[in-house]
Length: 476
Ligand code: PA5
View (cartoon, rainbow, N blue to C red):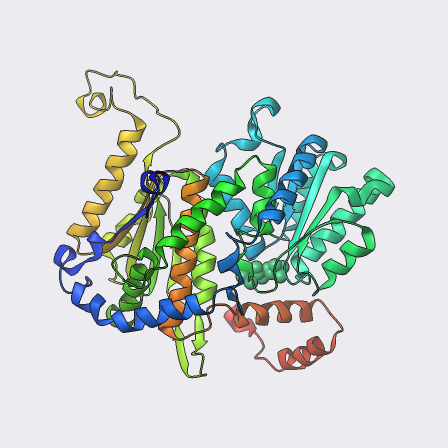
């Protein structure tokens, strides 16, 4: 039974604009095609339900098993807010994209520029690269003696994050002396990796990423929850939203479980229609980085060379991030007239947090004056409808995830929906959606270049030495 809140704040998936009776039979998906996948869908849903909480499915329990952890996070967040003026996350990939997406979605769009009394917490930065200029720039703008650093690495071994740690630990020791470790909170695996050992040796405040939760599925663990709570976001509502969507994914009926319907459609698009590009286009700046977070989730989970039984497949759909309306003036030409190889997912918001009226004026210019008396809210909505129509008219498929408004509860639902779709896709495609051998390969290769002396890197050094050498003739 649906509660009033579940009903009023429910996000929805609208697939009208990719159905064959709307978009035209050549590229659309028919109800018959969807129904044909019924058994496979049933199996996929049952497999995820049966294996909840086990293997790499630890994330499926996060909305339910974190009461104490959420309390600890809230207490810690209160202390951070009292003691520090800046909070910096050092992490990469799944250890950074979630915190960025949640912060952008749920806080003021110019959060750091707000005066202290109007901001919901300390200034907030996520440093997810090792560009030397970026680290130097960060150190230029923060007062390190008033900054708390959250070092986030599941493996506790990622060179990018650990090099940032070395730089920051050194700078902190110079700036605040013996108190330096009070400025660090570590979020990592309970047992594995270097960060846990460093944390214990130096007495850092610690949060754990359960070993059964992979990086890109960790946003609802302390990885995403601590930074969110520090910035004043209601983490209980994020988890409540996830639970509400989880309830909807209990159904094995494709037409009742939005994650299952979406997975089946994307499966058909990949296997039968040859749609290899998935554009996520939020029509709201607040959701801009949700598209970044989704891109990693989709690309790393589904881009795989072999099935679970080791058969070559080289499957996956390339995620592309776009922003409505900005990218109407940049990408849309390609989407409407280029190759028939894309599906567009719009994120659409019913009610924005602000209303911005457009004043009347320029009466002598009818093409401008017609805007007067309307609102930017109406304009962005009209642009979304216009884009949706232009794509449909060109026979291009799109779909919409509609959020009645952007709050912690609806964002929790959105995160859960997309995570579940990804998990079902892994089942339908019969691939391991939870490993990332391609990422590991690049990690090992770069650490080898840097001269890590560990055994596995020595072997990689020999292998890399035998790789084809660049030819001068190809460099102009
Ligand atoms: O999804 C993943 O597993 C990866 O993208 C990782 O999040 C990323 O490589 C960072 O790893 P770690 O958290 O171990 O530093």
